[in-house]
Amino acid sequence: MRGRETTHGQAPRPRQGRPALDIGSGDGSLARYLHHELGYRTTGIDCSPSAVELAAAHDINPGPSPGPAWQCVDITTDDVTVLAHPAYALITCRLVYRWIDDKPAFLDQIRRILALGGVFWVVTEIAGRRIANRTREVCALYGHTCSGPGAFRQEVTPWTRW
View 1 (tube, rainbow, N blue to C red):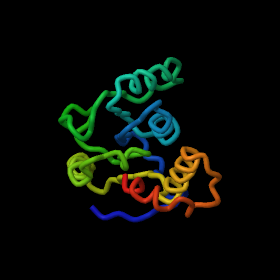
View 2 (cartoon, helix red, strand yellow; view 1 turned 60 degrees about the vertical axis):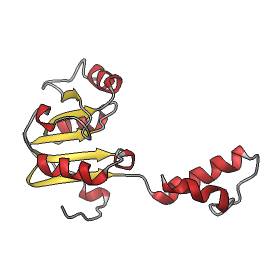
View 3 (cartoon, rainbow, N blue to C red; view 1 turned 90 degrees about the vertical axis):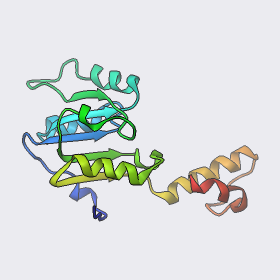
């Protein structure tokens, strides 16, 4: 699987009726957007039953067409044959990838279910922003005023590898 960085303008494009999978769908906002606005037949999955319930609760009045399908699935441990479709034209993974412990195994799962010519769209936070936020947390913990991202570098360094 080869990847490249994209910009917002290169985000998933409309694909009427093609299957899409939103991994870690949370409240379901991205899955609903893909489904209702871009025309995909979307399945939103999350390993949290409460997140799946929340996403489904937002579909009480989905409009003229039914909303996305929702499944409680842990893509890292569950059998992918339980998913609604055997292959997906689009797989999204928004703010989940950093929490995946075994990234090579996760990517193997994606390879199994990504349709030929399909798109795997990963959105992840910017590492520098995470480090700056963590630096502010450490400064607050020690009761210091943070003078910039380099403040308290030695205390932060061991924590920047998560």
